[in-house]
Length: 287
Length: 331
Image (cartoon, rainbow over all chains, first blue to last red; front, side, top):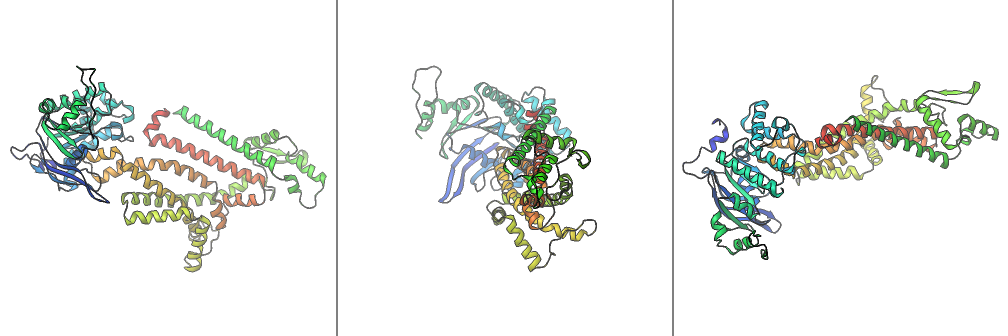
């Protein structure tokens, strides 16, 4: 990978610094009755090659946390605290500086792959434009990279399929394309925001396997946002539980699942159906 | 694709057939007897019968309709023997008022209507799309409010009022323009431009108002789409995000609208042409209606229908090029 890329200058790693370190992150939006805080004082870190699962109900602030890391908060949103990539502070940087990081250093995979892809352009255009925005070069070179990325996410016949439109793919394939788009620049961190929520269970399992394989091959760090505890237990090394914008509990996946400290985490786990006890009554979570 | 086109053409023919049938039926049953009208004041029952038989007005409905339609395709002959009048295809009959061929009358007026429509279309596309984009990108600012106020005015003010207001201000008060008068482009381009400027502005004002509101809504809607977030998350710069990802989805629906509006306008801008005294198809329609000149009304109605049908077809074909989702379904 070329060192000349301007993006690299921000991120010659500070020795010993973790891949991503978030400290006391708060996100708020102005409303007519004063600022509304949607994320309060969240802290976590992600090391290279590991996955952090962020779990919570709708409105718990998990997506806003990831958008704050990317500097992509919706209009009016402000983030305070600290977000460091390899020791370099990201909060407070200009949009121009952040643009070099987005896609290149930190990539995102979103929930609904159909609406996340532009229906008017072939997937080839949409994958190569990300590559060319950061690396430049010819369209032919970018296309080659894109085809390789499609191959890696196991899209059959990528030479031909690259010229197809998003609506010509199935839901699972579209999510693979989103992943191909994310990995073609070999980012240090991939943020997956509910990447399997819109997919059926079989396809979900395939996508999770694919992500795990890619992570093993590249050593990419991953933030995996989901409301699905079963998915978290499968992919994450560490877990952050959020509720109403607050951090409820943080720990290793094993600790969270075997010895949860917070009552809310316990309630969440109790609401999970168990395969070994089909007659149990599922408990709801107190909102 | 070929099958798709064929289907569109057949549907268009059906629409035109129905339009012609209904218009013809309305005149056949609801209109005063044209023979009496043609006959004039010094009329005798014999003369009326003679006119009826010459024009084929004594025939049953379907037979008359058939003569009319076949006249369009192969021409027709009125009367028999020495007094017979032939009318070459596409024959739309003769004006009851002037005895001129309706086809010729329309052909004479078309250039004016086309000039009015093309000039206005250029202006309204520039103003409507530009204003809508500005408004959407600067949403909530003074720019947005100014454009939307202008649009509200354009939609709510009737165009005859705008026309008169413009004449009063530009011609009477400021004297920037002479009183509207006909002028030929080749002989006096300046006078030609001055003659058409006000009609263009008046027509464009109303359409631009509507277009800017639609474009604004489309762009704001597109900006909120998930794929816009994806584009930003890829690290594309803002202008590329806007140009590539926002513009095309926002403007494609405008193509449909434009095809219909432009085609409709080619068939004559009734009010604007009348207010400015332009001898276009719209004015011809207005005049023929006040004089109950049935063949002419029939002719301009069919022309308007034909133009809208063609406009629609062009839009449908263009759409297959613009929106890949339509392309596949139609293949």
